[in-house]
Image: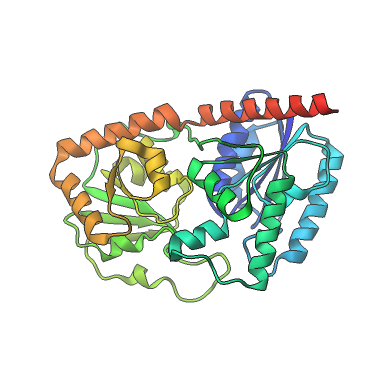
Length: 369
């Protein structure tokens, strides 16, 4: 089997793609990987060195959620079309909506990781004001989804959001994301701090709740302070004067794993989280999970997390303080999160699900042909 997979290097999709591509390669699948967004750094691509069956094509084409990208996207689609014609894969696994409209007879699986409309509604509580760009974006996403052979999403919540904003989907399924447990250390002693990972400028992640809270334990926040297309002063919350509040900025994966391994609690503060790799990484490091009470996190973590009232800093502080003062309860929730992650959200399970979906789509296409 030969699969062409697209990814971007700006957010968590790159980590997702690494888990997927590495696992597929170990199973004997030939992969052509195409990246968009920033050209990846050497640190981001070292994992590819050991994968001889992966043909990597990095590009700097901009992403569909960015402003003024119509010409860039058209050029990137032409590039991708030529590459598909050249390498002739059996299936396209597209992690951007735009390329679902490629003119090809090959099966096209579009995976919806997030989108602007569902983000806006989750953050602002209402539909965004109609603009020329928003009309273009809505049409582009809807076209890619409806011209795809099949659509997948990393949670039922995200799949439902796509239907709500872009219309009914004929062939759609949920494939939960996964991480490799061996990458994380759940076995060392914990320090008395809570951590969270999130872009300081992203109100969807709202790690600002932790900067507002009065807590008896230390708080460590890891994440970029600047949007991808902005320069200038850093986020104001990074200057919050709290002796127990520590901003670490952007961390590489080794640094993050160390922080996870020592953290007692992971705070999933997001008001918008279609899946959330960071809470999963915390769970695989045996952190207790304290999560914002939003439908997607309830779907994913069920009874294995402790929840605080929706976007409520005081409720969050109460739950974090409760775990801080009750080590036995904290250990109970840490073990629950760890076992739940091992049961439902491993990379092996994700790879199995995608392989089954690939085989179904390829077989269906062969029967039609």
